[in-house]
Length: 156
Image (cartoon, rainbow, N blue to C red):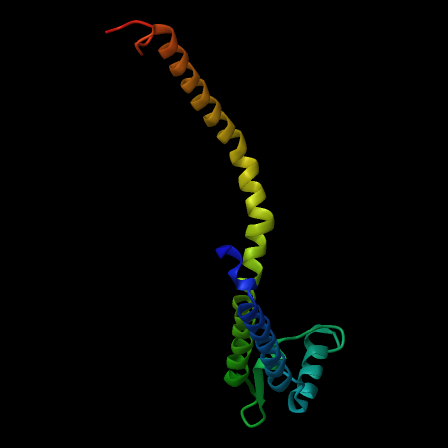
């Protein structure tokens, strides 16, 4: 069946290994690039307490991962390296989805879509079949009654 060719042995192993690869890569990027940075922790802890009255353990504050505090200038700057690795990690999630798709898609077609198609189309198939059978029976009966194949009914 061409719909389930991805369940053949070589394809099956390939998409499972590919999804694991993207998962490991995603975890490595998150661990290496988004681990806690001691130089920011104290600054963010104080800033959160002063501005919002919350400690860092009470909330998840993602901006702490993407900004650097410049001691010399006294301003916050965007850490573009962190932003780039965030998008790299997000791209890995997309890769996981793409890697899993060949294995997941046939399952939906086999178990869900096919049943809905049958449920929707069966009444119409029966209707078309009934009309065709009815027309064919009328044709045969009119031909057999007339003797030479002439149709019963008005002639033009």
